[in-house]
Length: 412
Ligand code: HGY
Ligand code: MN
Ligand code: MN
Image (cartoon, rainbow, N blue to C red; front, side, top):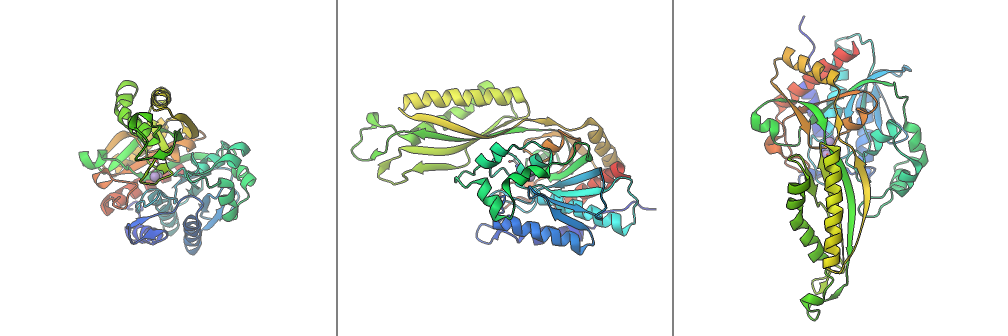
């Protein structure tokens, strides 16, 4: 009897229809930032998809969408899933693949009448992309959030999380009620695109993730003095842009001296104030995201960034301040789940690569409360967080079948 397999057409059709929510024909990308209208619309769409297939779905107090085959009360599940919020102008697959592959696994279990000892649950974790810092949905589930963080959290434009939660119909402090019992999760596997160039370069269809990089996110401010661009002599300026430019030039040296080949420092958003061509910028606010697979290296990077920014502020007669929006530690995946995924890949005769993840994922939080693993599929040219993020359908089918087999191993 042939083992069950996913139906790629169904998965592809779900991916395409979700992609239309928040799609921008100008950029060809999709924007569904956490707790925006597009994000809420996507959650409603997903709940409908579960229900149209005869499954049960709900939104919890933290905005996580949770799908089950029935609404029987259970005290333990095998979980899978990812996120459906996106970055600005993102691609079709980041997060969505893991959630919709989980839905497809449920359809295959149902149509093949597969008996499961432990029920499956599919999650679309809320706000994974860290609009407010961190990965709020999964951190709420595992009980990592505090009332202080919830009430203080804001995005890079100063929009308060509290306000956005209320607009999405959620009570900010009830977010803490989303926490589940620590033994609720028997195990967790997340299918995700690699978002990097490794698998595409070595031409392997599957990555089995060994560990997930840590990530910290700062909002940095350098405050100098606005002044006339024509009259202010160059040596009498407190020019915030020159401070940032000086820091940008220091990044390669910081990584060389304190980092590893897995270290990343990224300035992704810059606001120059007052932002007029004839005015020396008196202030700059920018995001700084640091990453590495080793906590000590992450700390060394952060310390060095702080020291270099202080020195640059003195040199350019600027004030330096920063706010740490989040610090997520690197996390190893479970050896047991890694070897299970490897065995199922061998059974499917899929070549695979054991590899770390440079991107952060919900799995790095699930790994704190249960045995967690991740399956990667290749990103064409390693591109992600951009409209031209792409993964070939054959690879999607292979990754989804490996997810199916691995979950069945855990749930049967
Ligand atoms: O940015 C990341 O690492 C992930 O996509 N949230
Ligand atoms: Mn993701
Ligand atoms: Mn992402």
